[in-house]
Length: 199
Image (cartoon, rainbow, N blue to C red; front, side, top):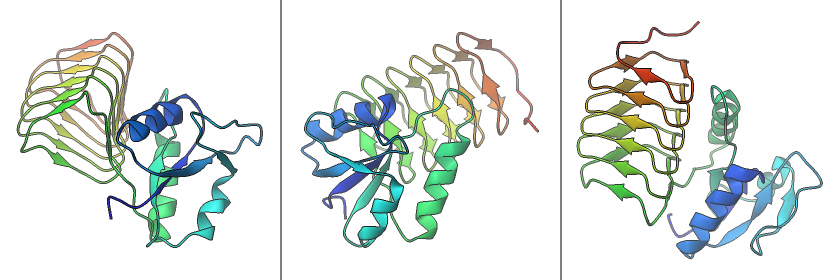
């Protein structure tokens, strides 16, 4: 299944970073979709139109890549992921070749680990989660589904981040802290105690 061609959902900045990573791994990309009809091809990858073009393909013939980024809680990423999963499609993991992932790390479906990121032993990363550029996740961390760890985020050992959270660029979380579901941690924040689940 890993060798199937892909369609990238989205054509903005995050999607283009993903396209670059996929091309470095010689993945066949059929094209990108976007709600903006003015979206342009990138690195030779064509713009196909909006997400309805995915329905022209069987879930057995392609994989999807969720190219929707987030600057707050990743609700749109979750919606896109769950809509296409309900239609039978499978999301490809995107792992940049310059990232470092320990051999026992458990990755969910549609996980994206970007350039320079490090994930140490004993970690679990849930479905549809982004570990962005140069993020560092130390041993034993449990990262839920639909999380965005922004560029340069540092998680010390045994941190738990529950679903639908956004950890902003450069935030640092000390060991054994629990970040509740739907939490938004601002860029540059140093978190030294548990954060409650957000309503």
